[in-house]
Image (cartoon, rainbow, N blue to C red; front, side, top):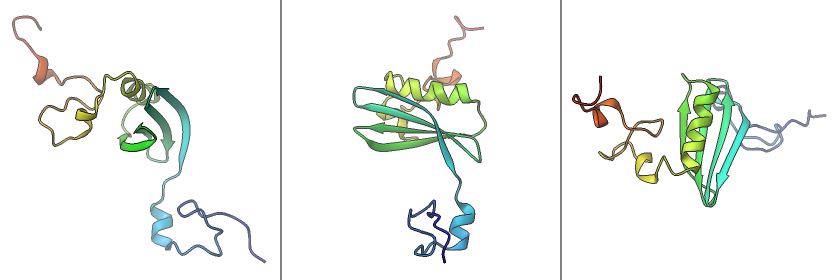
Length: 119
């Protein structure tokens, strides 16, 4: 007799699962806490064993997962809202892009700092 528990990685019953012990030990559970959407954009905010993650989707295609482990739930919510509101653009998702801005969706201080106006 088998205990009917599905594998969190492959979704198969554990007795049919071929996932290794290392894969299962490295797996982190994700619990959906918030969902935001507008037109074709969607953001899913998850709480994991390491902290908060935000999946950024367009037309139901995952473009990026932002791992904001060192931040609060409200920060993760703001990332999701900024994505669906268009504050975070697709160009900002590629960190190798020189025009990409801060992780939160805003320019870093060095990008928009004007010594005559700021400070």
